[in-house]
Length: 243
Image (cartoon, rainbow, N blue to C red):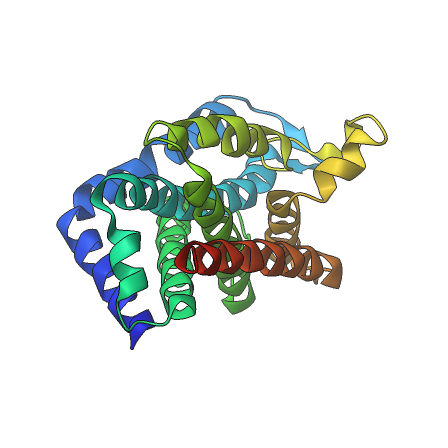
């Protein structure tokens, strides 16, 4: 019941700000597609660059959509509205509150990724997006929702959320196999970048898009991030309750 309550709150928020959320999810990815995909006429791995770019943009959209859905709102609710304190004194199990937040954020990221698929659908690329692609998008959203939840617990003011975006989300957007392949990066640095969740998400969605099977390693990496940050968020909220 607690999970459904949180999801209902997210749904009400989505309906209220539908146009703002939709436009925000479209602007940046659409600009990247126009500038990099259509403005730069080049190839990647023997294919049109747009074939490489679209899966990366879809992965990035799920990341930014999920992260932004949680980080800013949760920081404000915790620091100023004291909503987290109200949850702690309510009969709602705290783990259900956390799971609801993660699922709600992931669905927002899935919506953002779906918008990109709709925008690129008229382009004849022969790329494949199927149910497994959607699952990977959802899984990536859960990872970044969990990361956003942890960071919102660590925030000291509402201005910290934009800083987290600048320090974490923006670098990953450009480095993690989205716009350019990581194959040409220096050894060592390339392996570190490959262990970031967006790198694996981009690689798996791109493999499916090109009719290839994604490796199991990507699922393992996303699963580890989800478990680690999930345990941190649970630990934080239960520790705060017991103070």
